[in-house]
Length: 232
Ligand SMILES: [Zn+2]
Image (cartoon, rainbow, N blue to C red):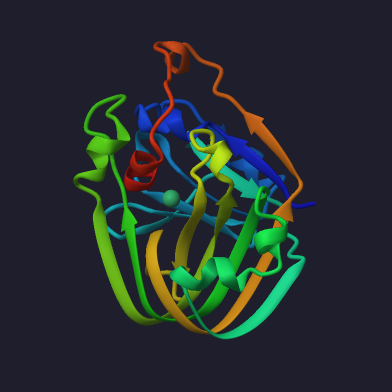
């Protein structure tokens, strides 16, 4: 339980690699929570309670078909071992709120789910690529940013330790889905109240690499932590 199943590496995504992917059904057969993107990097995916939701930059929500492919996905069979009720929580306070995982598990991956009323939330929806292999930093220049006030919903994502940057994105990486299923994307900031925080330490990581010529066309070099956070 609480294993990470990841397809792809974030450095490859930064280089615009998005043509191959794992089938949604392969991830959903092993995992019930997660986040990712689709081919051509057209939007953001959040997996909650075994359902995969896909938001495109026009703000529309789509369901993934079993055969749809994800060039990047991080998912888990989420079974929380830390549960807290908090009157308020913000992005800035999240590390502290996850005591005792911080600091006693700080070099592990952790999955985190936050249900609550979001007094404010800002998120973005990236993509799509305008040409094959368009780098993520170029997409970042035209990503759509949205803000809501007083919306109930759920955040899910992972904490990744700094030494994994490139394979993962160090720090918290969270995606959002509103209860009414009208809003969602990659979270930039939030303030919430009446929060249920659930988390688990991920004890194993299963990493699947793309097995294609496109993935190996050119060397994929390490990315700076700053660029990863800006674009991803
Ligand atoms: Zn994201």
